[in-house]
Every structure is written in structure tokens, then in C-alpha cells.
Length: 334
Ligand SMILES: Nc1ncnc2c1ncn2[C@@H]1O[C@H](COP(=O)(O)OP(=O)(O)O)[C@@H](O)[C@H]1O
Ligand code: SF4
Ligand SMILES: [Mg+2]
Image (tube, rainbow, N blue to C red):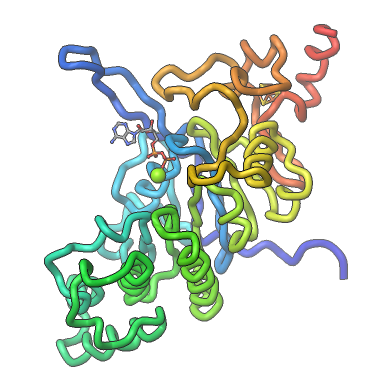
């Protein structure tokens, strides 16, 4: 048999989603628009892991909050199983989509016991009674690799890795279909990171979960994702199968990110993109291609004209180098 298996209908779909904040600079400054997410379209089929990668500040968490219904998009639509999430109430959305955030220190209430934290979704949704909550908490703790006795302890008595297991237990107790993992291992020690990544992989297989897996680090995403979307200043600049992306990244930004994975800056925890200048402020994005000030292949055309998304069999890339119509400008310049 040749070719790809038939495509499953998307369980999660973003259509031209944008988010613009009005940001005040200084006490008396006029509010100015900051576009954190700029016309993003993505789709996830059931059971797949889409990795979302980009430097800090590129809009990953804003996108996650929109998917969780915690922020309303300024433009576009989010659909779960073909139904717009704006039409669903927060509680029913929470049964289907759950988050795991970066920082298990701040995402767990320090005054609540592990039992209270993990059973909260059941109690909020009014499912079962105390006996049933205890049974379910015990089961889910076992699944995430924690002994039942932690039920009566508090987050402060646990290690970072254990706390992230608690956060995972809380996310899964309602048996959601989709899990938004926003940098779930970034705050953990390197030795613990791979344990949590392995656990997330096992849970996905066991429960048929769909993940949007967000990270600033391509190397982390490579472990879990089947497809990767690369984000820069609010836009998806490249999207491809994980193998394709790692073998022949097309966008100059993806190539720089890959370089940084191959030669990580020790101790920083953040890959050095070797791109020289710092990440631009999204309140003043560069003209034309937003990546042009840092792009080693930028032409004059790039400085004044934004590239359009080009979709091919390999996926999506947003760069003039891959746009047949832009090539004439290159020839003119030569
Ligand atoms: N509530 C907010 N108000 C104003 N600006 C925001 C808000 N949330 C995020 N931003 C800005 O949006 C951009 C994207 O932020 P974020 O989505 O957190 O990026 P990432 O998760 O990729 O680091 C940043 O410039 C950030 O300062
Ligand atoms: S459009 Fe131009 S500046 Fe932008 S990534 Fe491509 S080559 Fe670089
Ligand atoms: Mg973030």
C-alpha cells in the first residue's frame, strides 16, 4: 500500500485565530495594540500530538488559553469536533479539554491536600460522592505513578516531578479527549523531565488522548510529537511531520532552532538560536517578513513584503524562498 492513510476529521481546529491585547506603556501612555497571535490556522486529528515550538513571547501560551476558553480570540474560531467553543459553556469544555501547565508550584493550591486538588474536577462537575472520589483519586494517582498515601499530603511536601504528576492526575481525572500541555517539563530538573515525558507518552497511548504539546525546545517536542508547528511573533511559519522537519527544515527560523538544539547553550536552559539580536517586541513588529532582521537569507523584498503561507505536501512554510511568485523579485535583485 502506498500513500497516507485517510485523514481523520479534526478533533480540534483553529481557523484564522488572532488575539490582540491593548497594552498601556507607562502610567499615562496611550494603549497600543499588541498582536500575540496572528491569524493562526491549525488542526489536530484524534490521537495525534502536535508540537508547538517557538521562543518565549511568540504567543504559545496565549494560544493555549484561547483553546482552553480562558481567553476569547479577537478574530477567528476554535472548533472542537466541529463545534465552536464559543457556543459551549466553560464546564462542558473543561470535560473535553484539560491543561497541564509549566509550573506545578503555582498551578497547585498550596493550602489544599492532594486529594482535594485531584478530586476538584469531579466535585465541580458534581460527579459521584466522597467514596467514589476517593476510589477515582486512588486510581488516577496509581496511573500517574504516585502512591495512594500522598492523598493526605500537601504540594509543599512534594518534589517538582511529583507535583507535575499531581497536575497530570488532576487533568486526566475527568477523562478529557484533548490535553493542552504548556511547557509541562520546562520547570523540572533534566533528570525528571524525561520521566514526565515518558509518562505523558504512555498516558496518550493508554487513553487515546490528543495533545497539543507546547515547548520552546524542539528537542523536547521531538520525543512526543508526530507533527510540529513553529511559531514566530504570533504566526505559524512552518508546519511539517516531525521527521520531515528534523531532516529538512525549510524556514530559516526553523533551521536556526534546529542548530540551537544541536549546539545547546549549557546552563541556560533556553536554546541559543545563534540569531544575534534579541527577540523583537511584538508591539513593534518588523516590517515585511517579521523574521527579516534576524534572517541570514533576507533580501530587500523581505523587508517590505510579508510572505504568504505556502502549503505543499511537506506541510506549510511562510517564506519568500518557497513562493514561486516571490522568486522573480530575487532575480530582479540579482
Ligand atoms: N494579558 C496580556 N496582556 C498584554 N500582553 C500580553 C498578555 N498576555 C500575553 N501578552 C503578550 O503577548 C505576547 C505573547 O505571550 P505568550 O503567549 O505568553 O508567549 P509564550 O507563551 O510563547 O512565551 C508577549 O509579548 C506577551 O507579553
Ligand atoms: S521571507 Fe525572507 S526574511 Fe523571511 S524567512 Fe524567508 S528569506 Fe528570511
Ligand atoms: Mg508560555
